[in-house]
Structures are given as C-alpha cells and as structure tokens.
Amino acid sequence: MTGKFISFEGPDGAGKTSVLHAILDRLTPMLGEQLVITREPGGRDNQVAEAIRDLVLSPAYPAMDPWTEAMLYAAARRQHVVETIRPALADDKVIISDRYLDSSIAYQGGGRELGAERVADLNQYATNGLQPQATIYLDLAPEVGLARIQATRQDEINRLDVEALAFHQRVSAAYHDLIAADPDRFWVIDASQPLEQVVADAWDAMQHILTLPTEA
Ligand SMILES: Nc1ncnc2c1ncn2[C@@H]1O[C@H](COP(=O)(O)OP(=O)(O)OP(=O)(O)O)[C@@H](O)[C@H]1O
Ligand SMILES: [Mg+2]
Image (cartoon, rainbow, N blue to C red; front, side):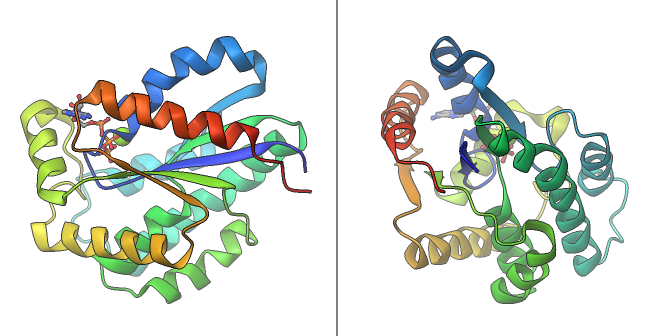
C-alpha cells in the first residue's frame, strides 16, 4: 500500500465540509487525478455505502435502535473501505475522507453511550484495522457548532443534529479521549476562528501531512 489516507473529524457544524471544500481548490492543482475526496457515512462512487447513508441519516426513523445505528455505520464503512479506500491506496492515491471511524466511536460510543471500546471492536469487522495516517480535527465547543447549523442549515438538519446538547457534549468528550490516546495521528485546529483562518491552519497541517512518509 503506497497512498495516503487522511480524515477530517470534529463535531457537527465545526466546518469539516466547508474547510475541505476550500482546501480542495488548492490541492487539486497539486495532485490532480491522484486526489480522491470521499465521505462517511457513504463514499465516493459507492452505491451501497451511499444507500446506507440515506437510511441512517434520515429523520424518518426515530425508532432506530442505537446498536442498529452503529452496525449500519459499520456496514457502510466496510463497503467504503473495501470498494473505495483500499483500492485508492493501492493505486497510490491521496484519499481524504470527511469523517471516518473516529466519528462512530464519538457518536455511537460516546453520544449514544454504547461505549468507545465496544464500538471500536465492532468496527474491526469494517476496517480490519485500517486507520488514517493523519486526522485533521476541527475543535469546537458543541454548542457553537449546533448554533451554526441552526443559523444556516435549517433545511438539512438530520437525525443526529437534533439530539440534545448533552449528547453532543458526550460526542466531544469521546473525541478528546481519542485525541489523548493517539496524539501523533491528530492535527487539532481551533475551529472557533473565522473560516479563512481555519482553512489556513488546515492547509498548513495538510502540507505537513503530505510530506510524511507513506506507510509500507
Ligand atoms: N469558522 C467558521 N465560522 C463561522 N461559520 C462557519 C465556520 N466554519 C463553517 N461555518 C458555517 O457553519 C455551518 C456548518 O459548516 P459545515 O457544514 O462545513 O460543518 P461540518 O463540520 O461539515 O458539519 P456536519 O458535521 O454537520 O457535516 C456552515 O453554514 C458554514 O458556513
Ligand atoms: Mg459536513
């Protein structure tokens, strides 16, 4: 395996999608066809994973059991790893994912209180241990992210966005436990800054990450 796998993580409304979009404008001229942008739940050109995304994010299913939810995320991830991420890495691509495994540990493990370790164990079936070489974490108090979403994205508030603030505080705490356990993988960025500054910091991190040696 020769490519690079990078994930973007952080609470709802931290700016993951906005920042990724902005740095894409700079990465595309550098990397061209070598760059693959993908997301979770779901995945680039991944019909199965995107179909599971539609199901798991739909507000139409308030009765969904937390373990059902966790297993659906893991199932989507399995398909994403097998069909999208591993082939891209084998093809020497730089693959950047808007969310990956850490999100399940934070949201289902922490937010839904299933337990970080148990959700990590479940996801062994999905990832076979595949972790990103680097994770850009957009750090933001959950209430700030929720306020951003409520102010600007009223039309697309999904099932998790409407969870109580306590849920999002557990998500944030679980993310911070992950960062503390694996500080070398995480590049933590202050996402409370103006978007241009968050983009500038993410771009600096990305330039460092792209010079890291690839894993054999
Ligand atoms: N640094 C910032 N300052 C102020 N507003 C921001 C900032 N970053 C993003 N926003 C705004 O906050 C909203 C949420 O941003 P975005 O969708 O990029 O977050 P996200 O992390 O991808 O959220 P989600 O986890 O829900 O997908 C958008 O309307 C965006 O314009
Ligand atoms: Mg997003």
